[in-house]
Image (cartoon, rainbow, N blue to C red; front, side):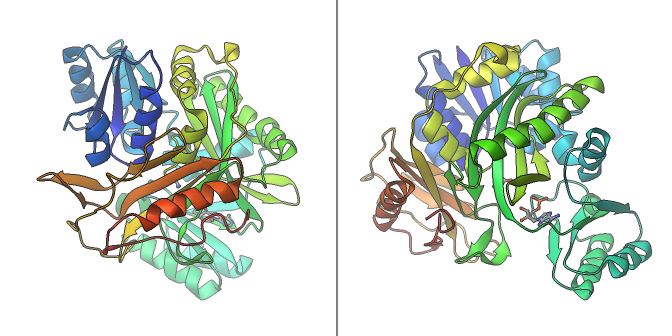
Length: 420
Ligand code: AMP
Ligand code: GLY
């Protein structure tokens, strides 16, 4: 079959890499792509958030299946447009994507089904929000309601900090995303990500992972899109995963179906786990980036079969075959990220690195300029490996990093510290 992957990050490179291992894939196109994707697939520079453009591209190229990577095209209704055009797509409708696009929507769903999450309140004006913060005390969490590229969340240690965050959000720092602000109880515990494939009815867990959101070692410094991940996450024991499925994920899916917006695609539950009890931090309606890279490394070719079953409503007949492996990915980012950083620096040493089912450098923000791979974004490379133990996966990944010659880049040296 002919397959189109939408997106241009390390997530999409890993999806494309896994899809290509499956003999069902005859032709793979990625849009818009990056230097890593160009090396393994055709790339097309189209507007991936315009459903009409994507549907027309699929018709022209006889595309049988579209895998939608990022949240923006999901929120803008690309899956809906493809459905109307009769093209099979992996990913939820715009209505179901509100589980990520609107924090208040998710909170209302949780309240409706009694799913455990932080106590919350919603505000459209700064004054009452500040009063609420003062009445609750710190620590407390302030969030812009809409999509803010993962940056619209302030975990405030003091009342003053929380009030300043409220003023920033209503002051327009996050544009429309900050027109409504959610204030939440601070939840203590350890975070983990739980990935569940859904087809509107059936839920199939496909793995757990832990991300590293802070830029600096020891989880210090500013928040980022994610500096590294590993799978599985030891804190997500079988018992915790079962509880998360029964108390949070399945009730959510049932409520979404009841409201006439069944969820199809991958539901990524960000959980806070305290003493074996999972509570929902947030949902995302897509794979995490870089969590996807470690999941794909563990799933390999069956990822395509699972995504097809999700799109076709056949998940009830599927099971997941686990390699008993651990995988780790270390993000190399441009110095300065997540603040200002330079683009265009040459990256050497990549050609000499192994590209196997156990070791891969997935590309995120890269471009090829005159035969040379150069940095073209904040997060640039995802150096990924698996092994019989997490320590083995880590050693393989960091050994590859040593061989990468990119003076303008940096990475965290402590990915996996919690589990190791
Ligand atoms: P979110 O974008 O909602 O995932 O929030 C970003 C990060 O903020 C999460 O990964 C958590 O580390 C933290 N966070 C969000 N909400 C809470 C909460 N209610 N309690 C504690 N930490 C939180
Ligand atoms: N790595 C976090 C995310 O993809 O949202």
